[in-house]
Image (cartoon, rainbow, N blue to C red; front, side, top):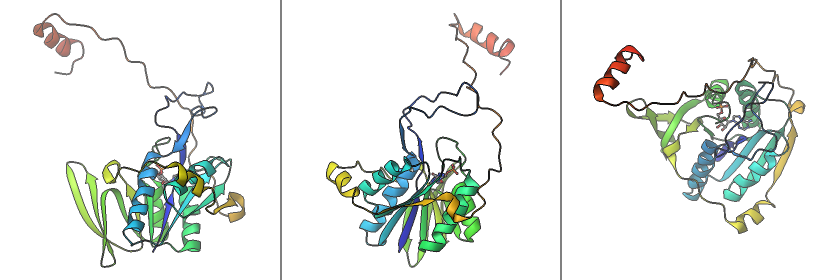
Length: 249
Ligand code: AMP
């Protein structure tokens, strides 16, 4: 079985994001960028399936600027076999990403796509679902456990108030939740080996797909600053403030 793992290059989760002065988005120039954390979990899960003898090949795909090659190399150093960069300077929205991934699925014929549940930059949580719909495949989102048996996928999902276990037909699109696994650290010799693994670059425009944006960002703003708190002298004063000022009780 082949597994396809889409990985997005996003602002590193440790970086405090800053809104651009023209409010058109967040600042990405001179900011540390990394693999989307949920995609690292997806790569790790694919590698574990390969180590268990269930998968033969892991292909990672990133759609974006030329620097996404670094993100792909990280995934190759973790253990993926080869990478594809669909290169564009354009901002690609989930529907466009899903169409590109569909195209690559048709070309590469994987049995399983493992994506992140969401990219932490735009928090869309749409791509996996759209891809499954476009392909007509089963989908299992927010996976916290994944088992393959008798040609089906047994998947545990984190839902409100508990865990739901579903059985999915293959081929399938799965999206990862935080507790699925803990991604491995990349070892130096593997970084060296990753440099020799194949990485194909395809210009996005050469695919002939309609990748136009369907959503226009009007503006991006910082959240309102939190007002300073106060110390109350007694429980009575607290209750009075909650009742009469905050009006929450
Ligand atoms: P989203 O729907 O944007 O929250 O993204 C969900 C998942 O889709 C991510 O965790 C990635 O696995 C995949 N994805 C989204 N955008 C890209 C991209 N530009 N390149 C590769 N994978 C992507």
